[in-house]
Amino acid sequence: MSKPNTPMWLKHEEEEEEEEEEEEEEEEEEEEEEEEEEEEEEEEEEEEEEEEEEEEEKNLKDVNLKDV
Image 1 (cartoon, rainbow, N blue to C red):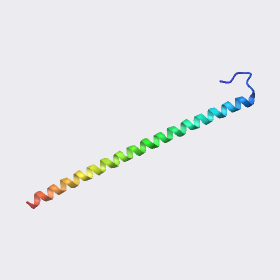
Image 2 (cartoon, rainbow, N blue to C red):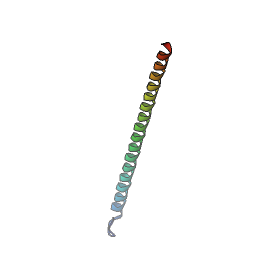
Image 3 (cartoon, rainbow, N blue to C red):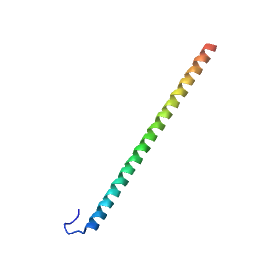
Image 4 (spheres, rainbow, N blue to C red):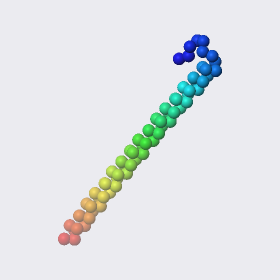
């Protein structure tokens, strides 16, 4: 960290840099979380679509069996 004889303006600059780095890290983490959430949502949507398709196919088979 800062040395005892470091001038005040330099200390202040170091603090600002640290704050900026922390903010950047937080932003990156937030972006990663958002991306993960989006991926999860997409996966859920795909699963739902697959289930719907399977249900439709099953219904079609049922209808075809009834016709026979």
